[in-house]
Image (tube, rainbow, N blue to C red):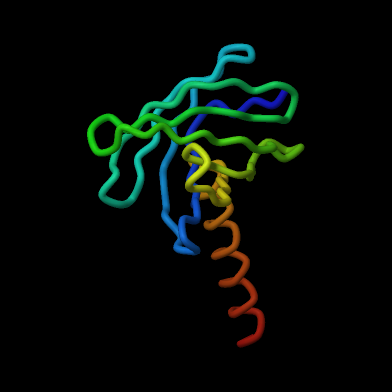
Length: 126
């Protein structure tokens, strides 16, 4: 079973427009809970769902802005740092979504890349 505990940065597409979000997932066995903060007027939402194998499904409910719940289904990558799938609100609205694990690993990767870039620049000058 995939372990998705932690912070994720993602995007969902609505009417072909990308919308960024931050998610904090808490997983206990197959049960999933947490919160999502959309980077638009919709704001904060709670999450409840499940993870079975590498399949993920959850419902997002906004705290203030929208009474409609959003259903997400998707697949978690084998190395558990990426997930993607489809979202829908009833039969009227749907689109694609993806998320990448956030946190210290991203910072370490960036620092490593910057250090390698600096070493390449220094070695080319010498």
